[in-house]
Length: 317
Image (cartoon, rainbow, N blue to C red):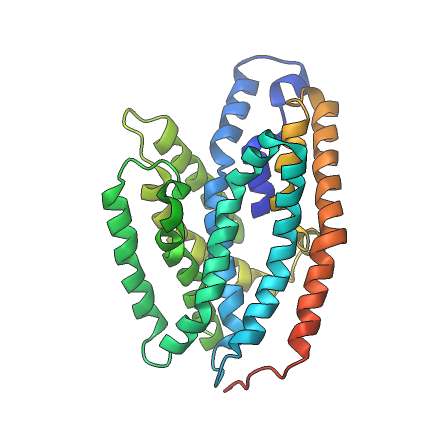
């Protein structure tokens, strides 16, 4: 859903005015509402939280971390699809390179987090994760003080990974809470989901519709805290009610969707009418499926095979 949210924020959302053939206050209101709530930056923050959770959870309580095995699996899993999409855009032309580059910043951040995770694992022998999380806020604050007018997270350039590190560490802290069994579901899951949508819209309003623009670097830290609690509720809800099979199936290709969606959006004109929108969605689905079947899935299978070649580290249960 987060990957789809990003695609919709980049132009894949339904063109309500032309779909219904009505141009009036109601359709304009719906269109404006979708433009506000489809906040791709907020969706990427959710990516970071989920990534920190998934990477740290299997290693909690481990006596050691085989860093060679860990990095091999992560790089084989992530890098081939990345190289494939970079190579494809170079072949297609500069405008495709520019279009896809706008989403690759978060992948580069992830690669840095993977590279640093063995160091984090070693530090956890001496310090609790929450203290490292608190300490990571200081570089974020310094970067924000140095560039207070930054509108987007990637405006910190080569230091974007450092600014976003607390988001990733929030996910890792969530993994430790989950392992301790301290996650609790509170309220209807739909209240949390609706709140996420509302907060996406408020962050967009703050950036684009206030007399003084408030950039995402100012609003996303608060959203990341909310997202951590929200993901915790989703975990508890899935354990109680079961996961949604269709979404799990589609989620297998979410990385390919994130990497590939910009190419059809760049190649095709902005959709008009229901048919044009469905054609755009079909093109995005085809690009996602091609990247997933021919590159991502084989890379994932190879990463798992390489991981099984050496014994996993022991866990203290």
